[in-house]
Length: 89
Image 1 (cartoon, rainbow, N blue to C red):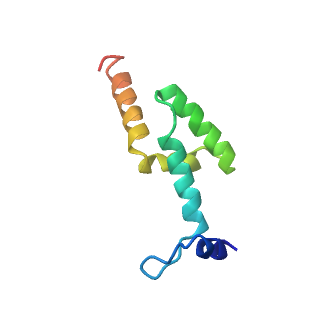
Image 2: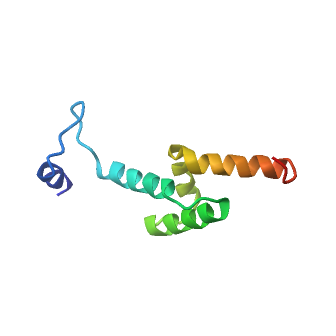
């Protein structure tokens, strides 16, 4: 069914390989994190909601999507550095 939907949307294989439904899921999760509100607290809440929506039993399964989302990852890195320096940047 997924292949039929791809064909009806005129999506063709790339380098001889059809897109997979798991790649659609990954793209959704990545885009959802990229569109999360700014701020560490908001990102944490957004991550928890995404983990629940995706059916992840453990939030660790969702955290790896941050590797593909540079903006939220940058926010987390800045917050971590601030914490390590006692609240000073």
